[in-house]
Image (tube, rainbow, N blue to C red; front, side, top):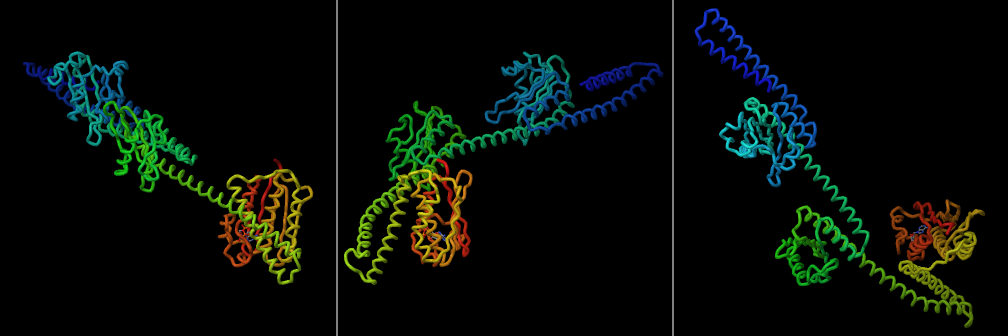
Length: 600
Ligand code: ADP
């Protein structure tokens, strides 16, 4: 600004010298005047250069800091400071065009009272600003009161506006806002050079402002997406924690209403025939049955969200189908007197996708539960019915074998022994099946007590001794004297030991070794049954403990078995709060181990 005043002074001086030159003057004075004019001309030229350089230097200085920040408020403050510095204006502000409603938001101001800013009553000419936005061209007026473009404007007259400089902020061929500076009292403050300078600077400032705007938008959009994903993950946990269809729908309805800011909502499930739609979760009966049927029919024809706009006092509704494997399994709706934002409609659709999966999972789970229950009941009935005739076959077979009903020859004894072995096989199978069914139905009863492992081990090995002797197995047992008592069901422990030692016996060829070790470990006793038998391939190891699994290997298939022993054993150990595991190498033998607690 100082520079401009000096320029004006120089102009006035030059005019005065021109005027003097026209007078009749003595030769000496005329020559002195000529010299003075020449020097003044040179000075004016060099002064203009200096002034241009000064402007460029100032522009360079203020432009340098632009782009350092991506915070919109910071960028706007920087731009405002720079504009005041470059133009030397008394006051000014930056206004940005709101892309959603085309309104002007004043975002940064200098020397304008906060109160006037808040009230939106800016003591400036809106005509000036609007014409800059409309034309995309900057405006300069040295005295608005005399400027025919604005002199008639009420605001110009009312606020006594004189010098005004206004420049559009253009980014990607769009006016994103306006820089406005003015001086109310003085005229002739700004010159065309100021408009040029401001225009150059505004080009750079607009890019910096737009970058900050884009960054803020992206940042906000990202934060909103992250928040939504967090909510959805929370909802997923709740949806999948309860495998109950009605509960799943209630959770979905609750979140749909909560997150979309709806007034209420409902969730419905299609009947097995896909014709009926029954309301599962609705606090109020918002939709009568006829309306539901109509909705379902519409959804079935076109499985896309339905948007019902508010009409005749009826609220807006947004209804989304729950689709699984291309089939409608239900619907989720939210209700609001006015309507819904695009964001909440998108959220409901995402939620519906998740709810549909959870509903289907819950349905499948319920179906499996029913099937399992039916299977357990069937096994329970069959085992009960088989046990009675088997007991009688075994009893009479034993009587005949013992010769109670007459003498028997050797061949007859052999036949009776075959019957006896098969009856034993069948009763083991019935007992394993009945245990599984009882465990699955939670009906197994255990009698826990503290007792010594040694005694139960002896009992088990005695009952198996004739088998071990048959295959000339070497048996080693290591049970430390100070082994703590275990807390378990003694008869179930015998069942576990019998299963594991029998397997070691079955799957170890003649002359092999079976070693039993027991030791205390933390607050547990660990028992290991090691054999030098067939071992288990890696492929089979993955299937161990599964019901009815038996290795395909011919050596295994030679042995009698049903593939139920390990499964029952595992369940029993776990019910007694222990753990079970194994390690094995094909061809070298296997070690099965389990633990039992020492404390109740
Ligand atoms: P079963 O012995 O009646 O077949 P199990 O459930 O006790 O049923 O065992 C399942 C399968 O695991 C066996 O068929 C066998 O393939 C394998 N297996 C179990 N114990 C051993 C072992 N000690 N050595 C080798 N294979 C074993």
